Length: 370
Image (cartoon, rainbow, N blue to C red; front, top):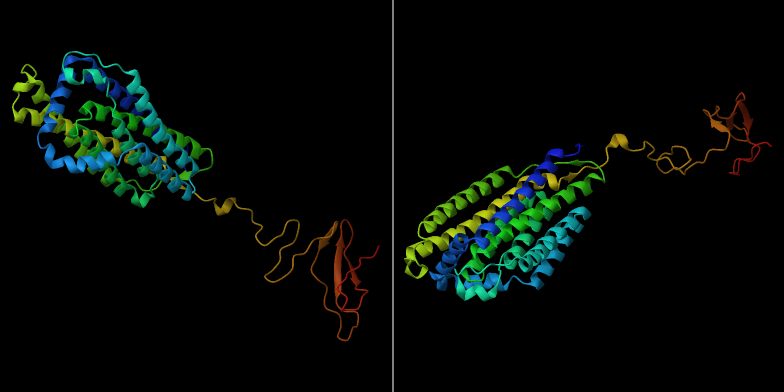
């Protein structure tokens, strides 16, 4: 049994707040400032390099992400949790998917993208942050990590991180979204993963004790280090692109454009991996093993019917008579006694008396004297 996990709750609150703050910073820098818009625009322009080589897989990934696939995935996630008899987990996973996707659509509608003269061709399109396709893919991927059994969770996390990263990079490669659109979507999913985790923790603690399973330490560390390496590469590319902001985009070399494009892709992949790693790091505590009731807590009345006496195998249950206490049976009747055996009965508050049965031995009815 475990006590209330204050450390886990605090961690989820801090992590969720950090991801909300990260989303706010991404929005402020890449939407509200000319420098951020220009960095995004250069990375988006660089997606023309090598597009023909990845166009087929990009189309397949994006075409597979739709409202229908989201609905099917949500039902599947809930079903997996329910067949494991984890109702709170099912509700939390569905809450994660629904909350992240609704938030993305509401935020996208509320945010206004100022026209700073950076990308006049797309100025009429309006705001595209955050990416809806990335939100769908990432929210479903993280929900699967939560509902999978503990033995499959680490492998599922690697697949989830790869899928979320692939979906986000695909939106950039197809020219649908800027890098900041995908990164902000991943931060929204991470925030809702923390909220769902808090819900699951509170709901499970209300229904009994829990015991933590083994953590996926090696996979978490591996995924975290890989993600940090990708983010470091993205930071270098972002720095190199920032040094060329005084050059017109049409005059930038292919190398500069590709560096900006690759840096955006690395930033998306690194954010996806780090977000999934943070979920995996606490998944064994957010979704712990359920502890069965202790044998010491069970009623020691196995084989005793309600209001009756202990019975052996194959014996019918017996019902005690009111005011009668059972004592050891009297010695058997002498051989040849036609009446049968004797029964000793102790009446409450009286000395024990021995009475001989008044019926023939073949009559099972016992009549107590009035």
